[in-house]
Image 1 (tube, rainbow, N blue to C red):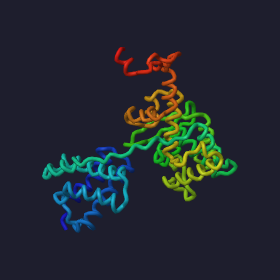
Image 2 (cartoon, helix red, strand yellow; image 1 turned 120 degrees about the vertical axis):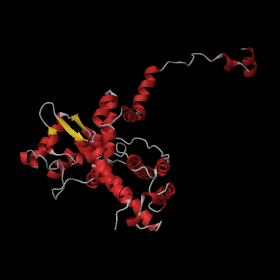
Image 3 (cartoon, rainbow, N blue to C red; image 1 turned 45 degrees about the vertical axis):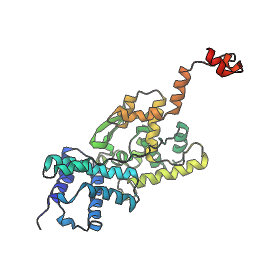
Image 4 (cartoon, rainbow, N blue to C red; image 1 turned 45 degrees about the horizontal axis):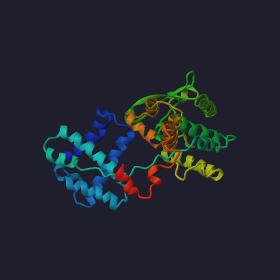
Length: 337
């Protein structure tokens, strides 16, 4: 059977354009691929079209809207997930605008589909006391506890995303003076993040114990499970949840109900901000493309807002009762004023 134009362009988009021209990360490519797997599943089951005969001309703006409604109704996807799927579809059709001009008008109609407005969640983070409590939970008399302490403290200390931690290898660490870690973030962008001496101590002990300081282990996953495979997101979240529950039993006031690995990243950013670190430096540590993204922490920090208000506060309350308050007829007084 002769390949269709859809199969040709979707294959090129996933296998060549995203990794080679866009420099997209493995996670982005996987997310985009999954979107089109879902779209094809919808087209085959709901539109009763054979995937092997699908052409670009068969996919209209209405098809995409129906697909987006379908994933929300049938798969119970949130507005945020819907928007993520639409972003992948938009990326494909922007690519098509330059690769295939036959259906340009329809491509632009699909690109005109709007994202749904989503409610912005407040930033969930732990106080410094909460972080201290969390990091006291691993049992450092055991090898696993020492590993978990090194893992959790590294996530917090570097403000790294969980996937960035998963992808780390010993070769990315510089444990001399000054200590730093090379993190590969979104879009394969690299950043160098300084580390503190306490963190270095945990890492050195952990690496020595697991023989990760040997030259042969340079490209081995820095953190791995019992099968010697690098952790998955689920694996790291499982470890975090275990210690979060232990910490909450000690002090419920210090540990929020919902805590994720990303909460540790938020916590680091907020603590840096509260310590007076410039937003530009926080941006570089977190690996944000723009400082505007980092500004969410400044907007969310109620402590900083309170300090700013207190600093700018001027006492406008008069020492004595205003004249209009003594007047029996306020309207009469105002008219005379």
